[in-house]
Image (cartoon, rainbow, N blue to C red; front, side, top):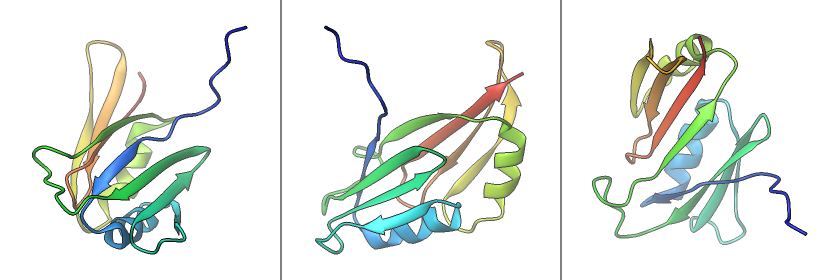
Length: 118
């Protein structure tokens, strides 16, 4: 019998896990460091999770990660996240493939693209 997947959690590389946990807290995630303080952590919101693992050699040009979030309203999320300092924000645009998409790049170069149906 083929097993059914239940969820997925990307693991983003980080040179400073505490910094990323603080940033994602400001984005509205519930965050929790793992027991080995500073080595690993979790951010969760609305049933999705993103993990962060310490990588002392983290380089945003070569080790940054990416995740795509399907959301109910890309414009509403964009408005919410655009007021958060740190990182970089890209406002949503309509795409030819039927989604309205935006993006957020966290302070360590990890990319979260997000979109909602047009």
